[in-house]
Length: 323
Image 1 (cartoon, rainbow, N blue to C red):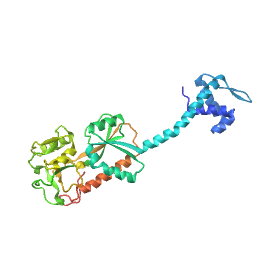
Image 2 (tube, rainbow, N blue to C red):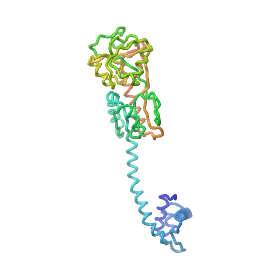
Image 3 (cartoon, rainbow, N blue to C red):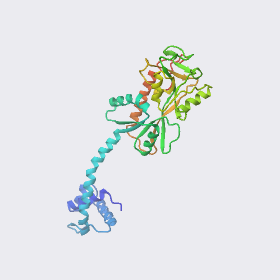
Image 4 (cartoon, rainbow, N blue to C red):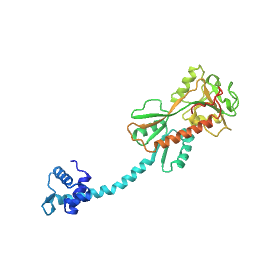
């Protein structure tokens, strides 16, 4: 059966106006078109709905049984339309984003506050979650999108690189500076070869970010001294700031405004850059507010880049590394 709301409205218009001519005028369609709709309706219902004479149109017994049902269908559809429209509008303005805790602490506050000024109608919901949970909730549809480092293929998920980030060396201000480090804000760089031979505060070796660090360190022949192993990037920052030991973290995790407590330097020769991604369930409709969100995120990232690297490159150029 393929009856539409138009069929029921046309049927009720004939009943209420007691004729095909006036009903067709009310519906703004031709009379032959209205007659054809009723023929389709009667064919699908396998019964006659009207008895027509040259002077009158009357409901058959089947038509009388159908009338209250048709009225209920039309009334319920018309009542739900504004509700659905309101829900659709709210859905267009809502964005549910899953982010790693360190990114939620260092970057998302500025993104949230900036969006409150530039996109006051955007209803942003931020969930700070471990990466596996971000992946799961993106796949299940609980989240519109997720942010993080996702170097490997994820089934049913599309991936978009938003920006590149580097790795930085971080230590307590109380720690003695590594050799060949340079002095002043214009030389805050350190070569992998010049990393101090001391225990580091690091992530566990099977974690993806630590794998990248260990791979780069091994390629340069830099010996790793066993130190404290942690599960979260924010723990690395806290331990290093307290003087437990130096650490290597992605630049997006660098705390801004802690210059009195910590010292940071870009790791160079080589600069290790990785992609930071936005993931969505494959085939899912992109939320209307997603582009405004990602544009604001990139603006905040650029601002952080300038604050973390407020110096010229070592070769004297004005180029700054990625964040």
